[in-house]
Image (cartoon, rainbow, N blue to C red):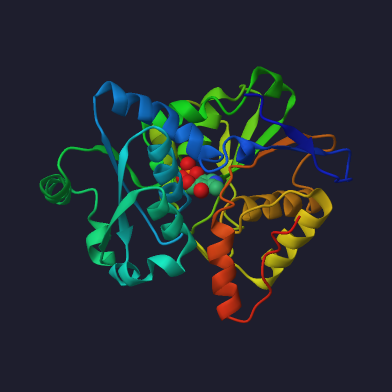
Length: 300
Ligand SMILES: Cc1ncc(COP(=O)(O)O)c(C=O)c1O
């Protein structure tokens, strides 16, 4: 499938910004989730596994995507969800409701247990409870996910000087780094605080033509403010493209700020990757409504 690329209406120093619409790749398994799951699901089938088990938080794009992809490809899916208080709130939570409607079975665990989720002891407990499964890590990042993300860039993308993407667990940017040209620079915009991502990316990335821009997480994972919501609404009004508030919205906000601050040389050609995540808007709007703050407009 040819993924559309659109140019953004930006005018400064001859810089052009194109957006790769990976969000349009699939109605429910959008953007980087599709790329990350592609080879994992093939591997699961090769191993004759019938169940996918993975981990995620309350509004996780990854949980929604695994549920939808599992349903489409005839896998049973199990989601280990961070926060036992969510067990009684499935119907209030659009992500969990969607995942459940797509057949996902949940196991809600405390934050403390969640922090040990990758330990061999905990995985043993899960095996006893659920039987054999194909394990997909939190956020979907592993070697096969990176292989899938290496397919985001195409040969024609060699014309771009910079490739920009949002960073959560580091799998997507690693794939992009591996398939970028040596003269291209890959800029990652982490959605969370902390330096640990550098090491995660180094585990998978084969080149060092990349850098993390750590100034645009807006206070941490899942945090937004009025300025970001205003930006998302202005962006969707002018481009008719929805961005998610957790990842792509912060990344594109950052790219535009960097352009304003003359970070990029004149005439730079920038490609930003829309990695999807639109399903998360509904949950974020619920939180914004509770706080009596402006909501993200989805009516484009
Ligand atoms: C919409 C979206 N964009 C970007 C990312 C970051 O991807 P990664 O976790 O591979 O760094 C995520 C999280 O996985 C996401 O859901």
